[in-house]
Length: 458
Image (cartoon, rainbow, N blue to C red):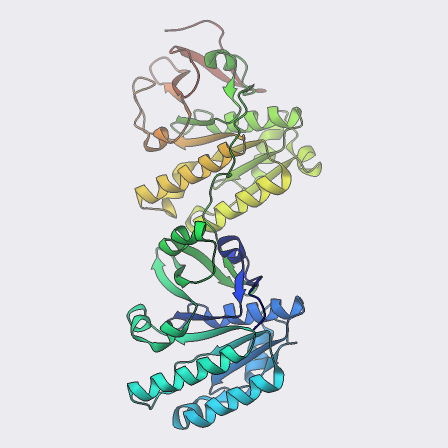
C-alpha cells in the first residue's frame, strides 16, 4: 500500500475543520432521509474529478439511470465526468452476494481514487446478524485492496450506528441531522469517529457539532468562528469620528475594542455607527456595515441627507454591506460571511447595527451571547475596531439601563432621550483597558451628524 495521503474533502468549509481527509480510508456518512447525504457525496465526487481524481459512484436505487441524470443535472456543482454504476435496490436486497461480486468487479474495472456507495443499508438486508457481519467484512476487504478514499452512505439513526458492523470497519463516521427551528431547519454535522486527523484538533472536532447548509449550489459546512491563533493586540487609540466623544475615552477607544452603543429607538444609534464607519473610510480604513433593519440603499440615502457620500467608498471597494432579514439569518453562515469579507478586504472597522434583531433567529439567550462573544473575540484578535448598537428600554436616568450583552463588550456608551427636558444625553458606563470620564454629556443630532457639547452637564 502506498503512503497515506491527505487530500481535499471537496466540501466547502470541511477542509478548514478536518484539514483534509486521509486516503486510503473508509468513511461512513450516516443520517436519516433528507439530511443531504447524497448531495454531499455527489459534490465530493464532482470536485474530486475537477482535481484530477478518478471517481466512482455506485447508487443502490430503484430509479432509472435517466432519472438520476436529470436529478443530478439540477445541481449547480454537478460534474458528470465521474463514473456511475447503478445497482437495482430490489436485486441488492434479494441477492446480496451477487451484488457484492458486482461491486467488486466494478471497482476492479474502473480503479477509482474515490468511491461512494449510496446507500449501504439495503446490502445484506435479508441476512441474519452473523451473515451480515461476514458480508461487510468481505466488502471491507475489497475496499482495502484498493488505494482509495471510500464513502459508505447509510440511512441510520445514531443508536443504529453503534450497533452496526460498518461503524467498526470505518476509519471515520460523519453523522448528519436536521432540527426544525422557528421558520427554518438547522442542519448539524457531527464527527463521531475520525482516524488520522491532527491529534491537537481531535478533541475539539469530536466533541463539537457543526452547522451546515444545503442548496442547489452545494453543501457548505461552517467552521466555528475562532480568534486568530497568534494574537498581537495593537495598543493604540482610534478616533470615533464623533466630535467631543474621544475626550470621554481619554483620547479615543483602543484599536481592538468593541464598543456597544445602546439606547431607545430615536437616540441616533444608526447615525452614530455610520459616522464611526465614515471617519474610518476618510482615513482609508476599510469597513463593514452589518444591518438587519435597513437595506444598503436606504442607508446610503440616509447618509446622503447628512452630506455623506457612502456610494463613493463602495465604488472604491472600501465599504461593504452584509444585509439580512433577521428572521432568515443562519448564524453560522452569517459569521462565515463576516469572516470572509474581513479577511479578503483587510477590514479595520465594523458597524453591527441592531444586535437585538438577532433574537428572532437566535431566541435562546445563552446561544445569542455565545454568538456575539465569538464575533467580538474574533474581531479583537485581528485588531479590528467594532461598534455594536442595540435597543434598550426607557430609563429615567442614563446609565441605569439593563443590557444583557454589555458584559461581552469592551466599552459601553448609553444614549438617552430626556422627555422632561427635550434633550439628548450620553454617558460611558464601561471602558475596558482604559480610563473614561464618568460624566454625562449632552449631544445633538445635526444636519452633519452627532456632536457633543464641550462642557460637562452633570
